[in-house]
Structure formats: C-alpha cells, structure tokens
Amino acid sequence: MRGKNFFLLTAGMAVFAFLAGRALTAGNCAVRTGAPVNADGRPEIALTFDDGPDEVWTPKLLDGLKEREVQATFFLLGQSIEGNEAVVKRMQEEGHLIGNHTYSHVELTKLSPEEAREEVVRTSSAIYDVTGVYTSFVRPPFGEWPDGLEFRVTMIPVNWTVDSRDWYTRNTPVIVRDVLDAAGPGDIILMHDCYETSVEAALQIVDTLKAEGYEFVTVDELILE
Ligand SMILES: [Zn+2]
Image (cartoon, rainbow, N blue to C red; front, side, top):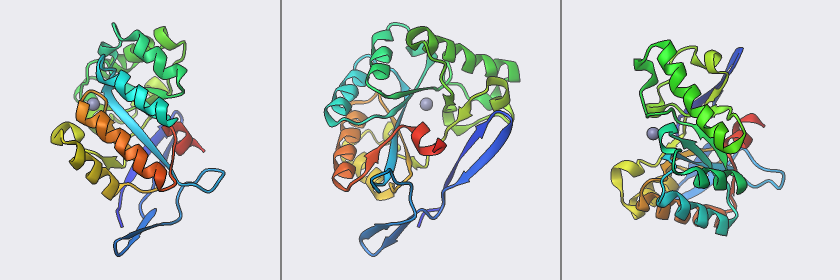
C-alpha cells in the first residue's frame, strides 16, 4: 500500500484530498478497491505531461493518444508556446486539458509574491491567446507552491501521485515498469512530453492499463467530480 496525497486548492478555501490507501496489493496480484471509477465502474487514471509543448515529441504523443482515443492533461511552459501554437490548438481540439506550468520553469517559492504571480499569469495569457480559454489548473515546477498564491491567481494547483522519473531514466522499459508498478485507480501520473523515451513509454502504459480496464481521464474529471 502506498501512502500519498496530492493537494488541490481553490480560491477561498483549501481542500486537502488524501488519497492514501486507495490501492491495495495482494501477493503479485493487484487488487484495486475503493477507487475513483467512471459510470461503467471502470477505474479512472490521469496521464499528465509537463514542460511542453515540444515541437517534435508532443505531436508524436498526440498522434498516439488520438489513435488510442485517450485524453491527457498538458501543463505548458509559457516560453514554449510561441512557435508551437498549432500544437497547443491541436491539444484543445482533441479534447486534452491544458494547464499552466509557469512561464520559465521557475521554483515559485523562491520568487517574490508578485514575481510568482507574474510567472503564472503570463502563461495563462499565452494559453488564452491560442485557445480562448483561461485555464484553471497550474502545476508548479518541482511541486513547490507558495502559500496563498492560489488566491492571487484564482487557480487550482495540481501535483501528482505517481512520478515516472522519465526525465531522469530516459529509458522506455524502465519508465513503463516504474509507472505500472506504482499506478492504481485515481492516480495522477507525472511525465514529460519532451523526450522520445517518455512518449514511447506513455503509449505503452496506455495500452497496458486500457487492457486492464482503466479509463484515462483529464485531471479535472479526476479531482473535481
Ligand atoms: Zn517541469
């Protein structure tokens, strides 16, 4: 059993969602109980990709997700949007959720409150310019969120419950193994769409978990229902 949690905060209130104990294992068999399920009773899980859009690998990932009819969540760097507008537009058109990952991948807690707000707001504006939508979701780089920033930007910070460590291992079979070993119903999987190994691993993870009956959802569906 894994103990883990993620937090979500909404303007005006703080809601802590402790997800520990959602997945049980028995011997070598994964027995998943008490989990978020969809209307058909299938367990739900979310793939999230940080640090994009990447002009090469994000389109390849989108191709693979489209082929599999899977939606994911992309937390974008504001500085990478210019020149990749078509990729961002495609994410939106294909039903993916677009979130904010700051403008220049900074550790927000090391900035002044005004600088931290600017990093987030500038990115939301860049996303809006392409999609016509102000995203409500932000993933802070390194998982570091300054106290109270959610009230200044009126957004929901979303961390993760399964870290693929894909940026570190850069090895498709290792990424697949690590994620499948850790993943259970209701999990939010952290990956990065800027490496070939991550894209290959993500699609293999989708194939395996879909075969196990999972439904891939965007994080809003997972945490707001
Ligand atoms: Zn990042």
